Image 1: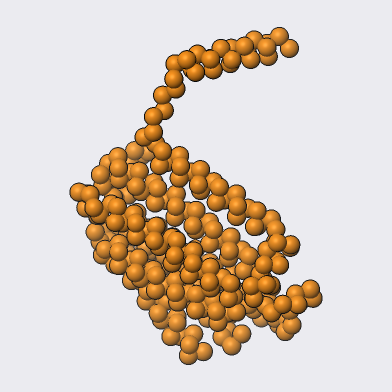
Image 2 (image 1 turned 180 degrees about the vertical axis):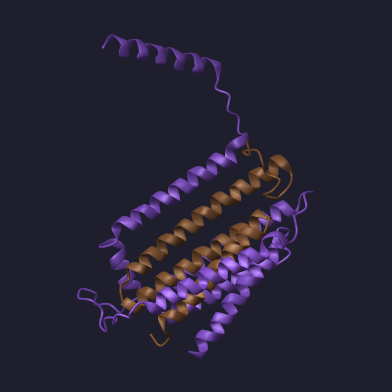
Amino acid sequence: MIAFWVLAVVLLGSAVWTVSAQKPVYSVVALLLNFATLAVFYLTLSAEFLAVIQIIVYSGAILILFVFVIALLSSGVGPFSIGPDRMPKIGVPAAIVVLAALGALVYAVSSVPHAVAPATPPAGTADAFGSVADFGKALFTVQLLPFEVTALILMVAVIGVITLGGEQMQRVTPPRLQARTDRAMREAIVRAGDD
Amino acid sequence: MAVPILNYVALASVMFFIGVIGVIVRRNPLVMLMSIELIFNAANLLFIAFSRLWLQNAGHIFAFLVITVAAAEAAIGLAIVVTTFRDEKHVDVDEARALHG
């Protein structure tokens, strides 16, 4: 319980630091602290595989991407827009909305009668709950569809990034190829009209 | 669960709203993307806490899915930031109004 409160303070403090830091690099550092704390949370919740994934994917891949982009953009002439400029206009309403929503949420959860959690894992999961073996078995048998969707999402991301990044590539089609494409298309249209 | 689930709900919702405030208030798209990561992670924390409560690992799978979505979102978002910066030489979401109409 004490560990929970210590971790919670670190988690929320680093989240506030992420949002309020003046320089994006400090935000990245705060976010790193946040993710590491979350990984510890996942360990206490016996989700060991996800704790490792959290460190590898978030701290290892995503944050490094952020650092690279910051380094890339900072090396140029364009300055970052610094500071929470919109805070005066929106700070008070945002705080009111947040507090109201938070109160409603906590009230809703606390008013639900707590069902008794099953003391033992359901049948068929012989491995310890949250272990890598347990996770892997579920991933490749019962939960295969989300896993496949994961692959699809990653492919969409790759295609999107290539589309965005390859913007300034030469898009001109060679004239001869263009003529051939036009002729093929015309013939196809004629054939479709004959049917 | 030594810690009541309500604590996790409160913690995750506070973190979620910190992320929402970050998206609303900040004008730097990089910090906005990081705030979105905070939101994703708040959802993930809830997934895993409830997964532990019910001893069902479906929550773990969906936390995994959320991590993937977050990675894809960060990649595409940062690509958009870099592209915008290359064209317009500034990093400010209020200045980017090419699609404003």
